[in-house]
Image 1: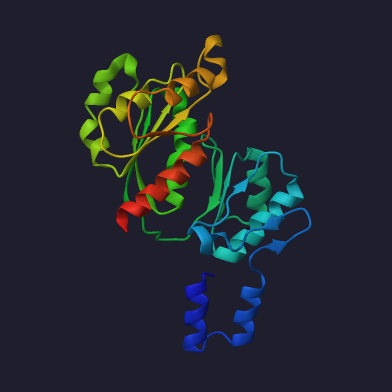
Image 2: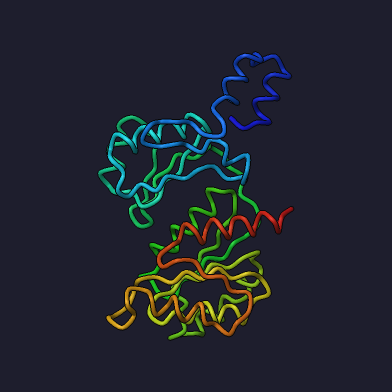
Length: 247
């Protein structure tokens, strides 16, 4: 439960002071031996802790997933596998898994999403990273408009959607190969652009390094660059910008 919810329950007489005290004692983190759950993060940053699923032992992942779900009534994990999903679904059948973005989650029903983030990709092969960004932003309360396959090799496709992109509070530009999409979008909008280089491309793309260097060296203003294939980081940053725009 959130702090305001706990205090409201105490005020209404639905929760005793002793029970409320137990919630606050678990902060700022909960010790699990193999993990220290940052239960205080949502209070500090406004967004709860997220699980990076890749490489975690099954037992650890299952317990962490369960504890975060019990704590907040929802939970979000990135870079999950099909086998990890099957493991978690046995205990939490309401769990949803997207094999494209590799996101695993349980969300609260009727979640309100506000504002607008435009998530653009240069090509269809970039969609996995873009979906990680879009679904992250949506989980944290933003509306995400997806505009896929609008790379510079057919720039008319991008220009046909420029009105939608310009209306957004923030733009996420996801591109591999030479990574030029971020620079082009940066020259068309008056909002922040979060550039995401992907590892899509042939040999000289160096698994995304070429796109990363292009984006870092962009002559367009207002562009911030996250790590290669880091859709989660881009979606999180975009959600923060969107939140500020709504405040």
